[in-house]
Image (cartoon, rainbow, N blue to C red):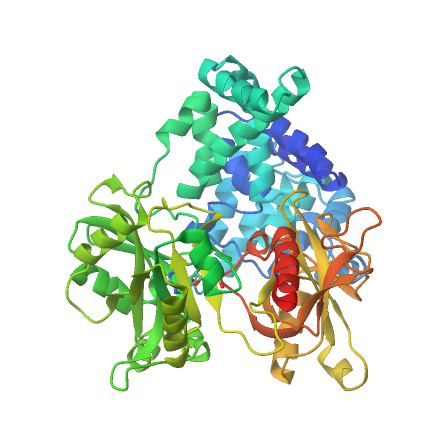
Length: 614
Ligand code: AMP
């Protein structure tokens, strides 16, 4: 594929704001790609070169990009910088300067996507001393053959600022659109959808049939994505084999699985009413890790599917020594635990293990214990479909002797009193609370379906659980805070229906001075000129940012709000948090994993329920 085609689509995608139009454009783009190149088209549309878990980072500083632009356009660096100050986007600078370039290139051949991919991959993989001139040369080489529009996107990819706003969900919507025609020919599928429509007495409407069929295909795609988090390889299989390609995707050690999520209920009584006899485990406050063992090769993934193997050498070693089967995928919560005093360290201690440097020293000082709670795969078999009680039993058998990997503490009960007592014991030990688990549930990857229910510590006058919100903008601050550049945050929750972020709270408390500085630094890198397309907010912050960072927030209660858009329907008001306070930055969650509007509505209802004692 010529890069011109990709750049043309990127330009059009950037200009539309409706998600449906964006999906249509992406679907058309994927039609243009052949099966050998579609994976790369998918990665590049998200500003990447490989699936996120492979952690291929192009990371190229602005200074070097400026040099490459100067080199290819014939303008000197001073002029490039001047224009950058004015435009605030090096992609636009490259576009303008290459449009009036002073030198015509000797090599200007038509750019292919393949060539762009190859050079960017080389940029990503060259490291160390002397690599900068090579990187500049590789980028300038691409710019030499680029049209102004191509230059705009060539620059944004290595800078990590492509941000077309195409999330994983929209990608899958586009795949489903392209498979619709094939789906209509699949007898089994058509029958299934018709039967569902009949149940709802809607079978007569053709457009309803089409919509439902597309949703069903989308669901099938997502189910596979949940166990194999690589959209590029998924797209490739679908392109090669159509819907049949889905059968060729299965769980595989080394490729992350999207985690199952916990629902919440306000009391042990309600949990027992919902689940009956269930397993109850302590809720540990550390990092959720998925450990993949494939012979002696061990990979560890975070909750967001980042590869964090290097950070936890003691767990890698323990997986090799303690796990008795050749291959396995299991999950647990890792935290710093003091063997001698039998004390759990607070999260502030554990978080220090999330680092790139000084790993060995910290691993000695604060070794982690992995409290394992689920087994998804073992000895070549996918166990996700087994009931939880069986998976747990097998997990116990697979973990051999040792201190680093141990089973979570658990009981089985159908009594609310016993559950309350266990909850109190857990809290006394310094843990966060409990998680109750449905003994008969399958492992539901990537979703929240009442197979797990959490109950956390609650303090008087506070919500019984914290809320995870996404930062969508910040206020510059008044008085003393002007010196930090940040006085408060505008935050939102995720609306699954519209795939957008809806405002819920302005937060100004719970932040130390260091944190204000840190937040300002982090957020300045993801500034957005104007309101991002996937944000819905009436309030205007001083600076908009791309929805990226998730923060955990505590509050007194959820109230109705005329100014926030979360849960707002027509004239009906939305919801807000009363007295919100920042608890911590949740690096383990991506924006689409934040609390949803639906959860806020349900928390609001439960809160009333509890208050009135109904
Ligand atoms: P939350 O992040 O508050 O929604 O709570 C769910 C998280 O609790 C999971 O993602 C795990 O990281 C963590 N967790 C701690 N202990 C357990 C446990 N025993 N079983 C499952 N998850 C646990």
